[in-house]
Image: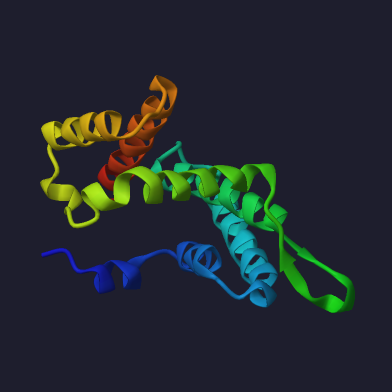
Length: 157
């Protein structure tokens, strides 16, 4: 049986530091966490240069890209205080959060992803279209958002 605690113990050091940076909610610690993770990722990438590309190298690329976004979002102001700012790259998160709360939360918050079938998603989309006056484009955005959620879930295992 797969145990999350066991997989965390086996995770490479760079991944632990990366996850700590991504999950950091204290703006004063965010710069330190992103710097630590960035250094560990670059060290590991350097070690892997002689090997053919693999899934860990892809994960390293994605982690570096996400850390760049975090670094852009956080900045150190006068007096050494760190404050968060929403950049263009962070705006989609706000849109996804809004999409979740406006259209999907009531319909699917009690569902387990592993139990959801295509016909469930289709009925959610039909219900959203029936009960709300939204454009076809907005409905496509909702559908694409759900597709991304399920793709991410499949990648996570």
